[in-house]
Image (cartoon, rainbow, N blue to C red):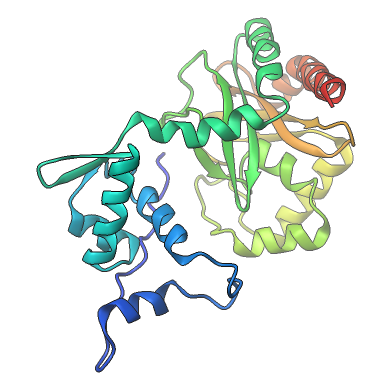
Length: 286
């Protein structure tokens, strides 16, 4: 199973009597963006960075402009700025990101209170249960992997730090969604592109709300082959000093080794203990 590619924003088209640069400005504007406090050039720079991915590791100026919804002139200025700063390098007509771009993501990881604390606990948990262990945070409608201790190859996609999966059909996603208010949950589900990944995937929003409400009551989540056939995942929350859920910790396994019920029976207690240990370490750090 692979994630469906996200559509790139269309390139701005100049209408009669409107220069292309003005059309670009209009395309970048949105009613929900603050007025004078919104730095459009900075937003465009981030848009250019986001055009590079596994499917587009190297791009021409034209490719970048089209993917970011910018004019060639606008994309060129941003690429040259990123190149001067060391975040982009060029070879002939092709541009690509440099390892320096990792500094931006690493700054987030090192700023998280549980990042250094959770890794040894997760390694112990993975060794105890002989399954993969991961931690993720919620970003709008998706979970983002921030730590991972892999063992078996259990998915057809490669997961690593920074990988994203839909929240509504993953155990960590439902664990994190359960910590939202009812209004926040409604907004998250309304914004989620609901897709039937397997015959087991819950796609009805009312049913999803009931399932997430159950997760909220019981304090843990299990997802049985809803994201990918054969994949079962069990999750528990990581909390900060104030008791707020800041991340989720999971164990992932294959149905050929354990059923969902067997995983809950065998792995829920050590998973909850590990999550509680990380939460206590986070609380002590403050």
